[in-house]
Image (spheres, rainbow, N blue to C red):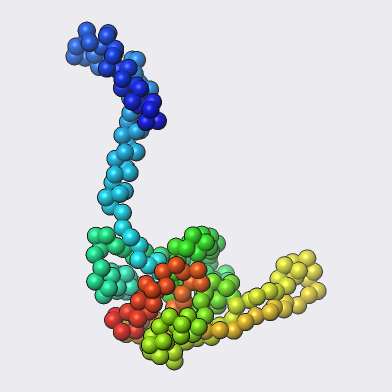
Length: 249
């Protein structure tokens, strides 16, 4: 496209007929013979401006966090997002945090959020596969779903290895759950005489945030759990976030 645009501009400058025309006749000549060229030049200019704008406004994403089955008001969202960046003292003109909202996972067909479950599953899977989801704040149903799917770190193992001091701070709030290593769910689709069976492993895949100041003040009636996604590439930021929720919020 770049070469086409440059060649076209060169042709336009060498057009002898164009040099003899003036005013509206020159405009008519250009529109009559160079419509395609003008379109190419406009598209080329758009991509140049778009790329320059993207370069100048690009921000480094420090952390990707998701709220799943958790409905947060404006104040809580500000505390979970902007206040965390302020707590870190980072330059917000160059750094940002991504907070996913409106994600719901439920098997309850009577739930008002049931119709959003399929779309939410697709978004969650795509974000995890793309390493664009680091921390999840969720209710018990979502915590069970994330754990059983093998999406979450064993937090006891992670914290003991990466930050023993933080482990001491939150250890009493660690929550066990199971990951399903294998099961016969597919076999049951073809043989309804089978009963469900699964091989599982239990570990500390979540932390109950109910006692933290921020979550307590939000007034949730049920516990809110934090999990760290198993393929999270921003472990340091995820641990900073956990520390912020317990000490800085």
